Image: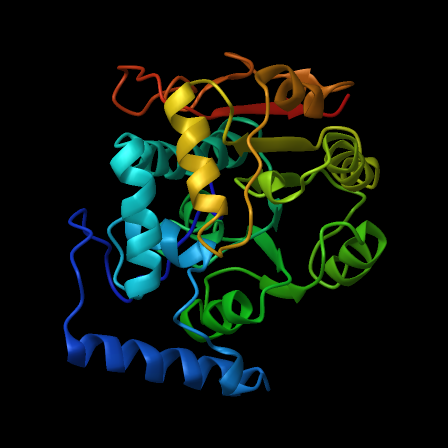
Length: 296
């Protein structure tokens, strides 16, 4: 589904409740402040059009979303009620993958592409709980996302950088990330819930392979994305894509698996969200697949 994160000031709850008028006005003020902070024009904030990151925030139980986002989210949920569960399992995969990379694999550098809006347990928070010296670079080309990231994700324990760049411009991403990351050492490349925004399968594979090509041996790729694994999820995405939000393209499982070609998959391989080393030990099948693989 759309970008995996949502903004939550404080700890996210699981209610997904509507905000009051005062809260809504406060949210608008916060977003305008954030946009001014990055030099963006406040008039570009059109809350009448759903935004994929804010819809995702709504499904995660966050508060930084608007009526248009909730309407689009409810439209999807009416057809595919499991979307909220899928969103939370996608979030859990981030924790599981970063924990594996930082703890078991010893990765101390992370490149998180398609960051989305920040909430609790962001990549740098999970990694730096395990290794305070871990370095993290976030990449996104959405001014609203970057504004919120810079305003809310302040003073991390280790080095953290935010880049305004497009994932298709891999040379620029790597060039600017070098200010924080040492590409002579292994890197954990995180691409969670982002490649569905690239419609053409070949173009999507090329974008991922280009980024992986810059990484040294011993680096890892962690990915998750929505998959066309049920009629209900296909129909819900069709209606979501007609809502005015940026389209999100579901992949066939075989197409998603192809992102890992040439890499060594970490057990349990490419599996449904909820099956990759589940935190509670009880795997749950949801629409969407994920995997982690090492560059030999």
